[in-house]
Image (cartoon, rainbow, N blue to C red; front, side, top):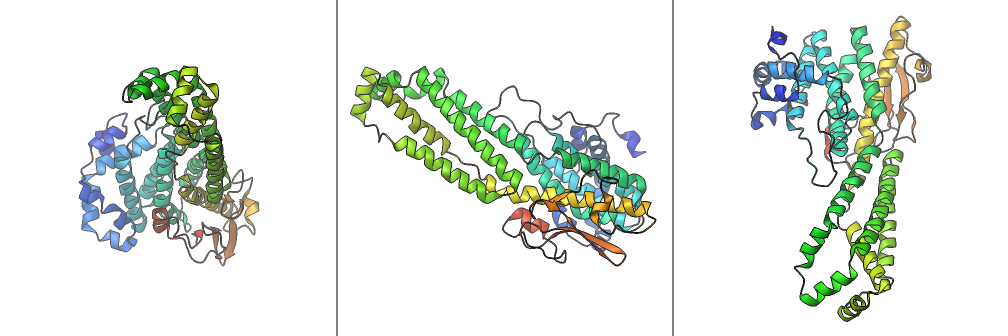
Length: 427
């Protein structure tokens, strides 16, 4: 009856329109997610939230199940600048959290079909985020958050012998699509670079240059007009763009290698090189600049361009190094779930026996074994324990904890320095 009440082609806007949730109630969702399932079952607050938002959740499930063309959350921009509008994911994550809470309640109550439906919708939303081709940085950060929230619930849904083969197969397919779309932030870093370039191009446009010149005293305005002509700005823009392209490759390498320290080293080296070039000819005094303006001195113009490049490139340096370990934590969490699904599929085919080694499940049940980017991209660790097994990553502290102490995911995603513990799937 609920599905019949939903629009035939439901999208996220329809889901948000059906929400019945105040900000104060939304603030309760994370604390509820951290509570034991037994406590959730007795929560009148959660029961009321789920009942009041049942239609919104149904519409969210439908929207999350739709295929994405890469622009589900933000359209392809006509022109990229730092002022390009960004999508707002606030309501998405309110309903995403509610969906996970609904799944936890169903799992605790033995209603596996309902829980599996919720979690396949959650996986669909994650897949849409990974497929996004605009607003890539925000979409990638949102995917990291979604994986962090979903990992414990999805892991719980896979434990034991009651996992339905259809759910197991569908979840494996969905998570593989998300995992394989993760490009180690290449697309995001290139898009961010193009946004900065677009903003720079606008600021160097003749009309904007004239507007800024008009604020200067007469003699300085005259000097600027004669020295900072179109050729000057074209030259400066070319040099800035070159430095930004170089920086983007440094950002990408840091994410690809899971090496935040490399990013700090690269930025320090590039900044020092730009500074040395800017200071090579010394500062340009007022009278030297005035004389150069009268004679259109090319050497002075060149020095001014170098100084402008340095000023622009050091104006706002993103703190991307803080994102590197969080990105890889999400990457490894997805890998652990995928590896667990492959082991479960192998076990089902082997009538209950577990593989002796993880390599046995590939390529038959997973094309390629997921890697641990916190352990030099070696395969995740697999260990049998009686009738159960563990799959784990060393985690962001890079230490092999034997899969005994689990990373506090919430604390780590809030503060990347709280990185003790392994990333574990176990049963």
